[in-house]
Length: 478
Image (cartoon, rainbow, N blue to C red; front, side, top):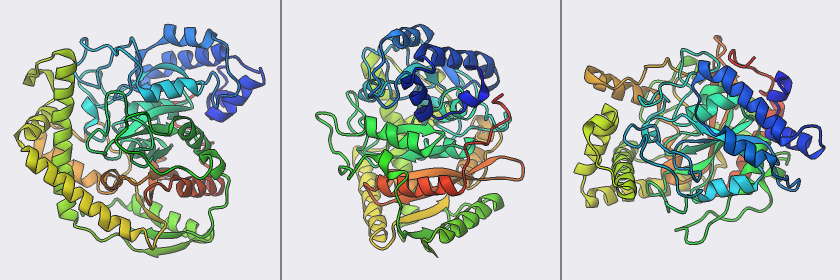
């Protein structure tokens, strides 16, 4: 099982091997543990080992009717909770204080799907920034170039999947945190529609609906099959996404029809887009035309400055909420020395904002959502870069001391595409269709109308067939 060919099979293929009796869940798990031990010193992707719990789960009888019987999996150390294990969310504030009393609903469903959870992956403090370099556990390194970021906030999960430690891993997304790491690590990353996956039992709609749960995967079909297994409302959820017409996994090979795709390289924050990212969009637009789709250069019209201000207000409120939520749950008292400087500033900013100002920000985001939704009455999808730049060097988002102004500048330069889907609640995906001259992956970002994951999966399956990426291997993978 140390054969690198097996290590880079997707979860669907591994599940089929288990069903046929060609490999056992225990053998798959031991291979994952071996790769963690060998590769994690170079990557720092896995920050909590769960070997004993995983081995106990792997010894249980498998149910061959589950989608992923005995397939190893990792969960991000953010939002998702596994009973009896520590959770720190990348923060010294929580480290050593918090042990999950129960599984979150998403983890319950992941287990029911047959997955064996082998550990937890690294994340920036509370998932607040687009890189994975927490002071608590140190930086995660990109397997394609260990001097560069794997993205954030699901960078630990993305690095682990890209390096072949597991075929897919849990991720969540409040401003691009599934799609950005997928882009940085050459993976497929889908952010589902608002309410598609549950956040319970502790959360109803974290960040007023900005947060979505799912995964980063090596293949499109794995993402679809996992979403089939986990999607759907739990009792008491505040809202849920429209029901699907058929299983998502059946959409992957289904003809997408002729789609109307609006292409743009204009970041809504007006950041300059790197030439390699521009080239990636142009090449992908041409590919979509060759596949028979209607491609035109256009983008939604909305109050871009107002959206940026409203999203920033909601994001600092999210930071304040995260600190307060954990304080209430575990009797903690926040103090500046327990947090990274940027997190503390965001927390204070959220604390200073009135409840009325916060609700006004939510209202402004909802107004933009209506403007963007109208655009999708005449278009099926938008196509943009996932990020304005290829993976940047570790340390690029340094925020301490005099670096604060540079931090804000770099955040603005790097982003400008993904957070719109969080505000609107629409599904979006990053597809690994382009590599730079230096062999760094660049993600292409597609957004669909609310509830239209089926359209994304159909197109993604077509693109995967036209420009397959599964044979590419990063340097840290052997």
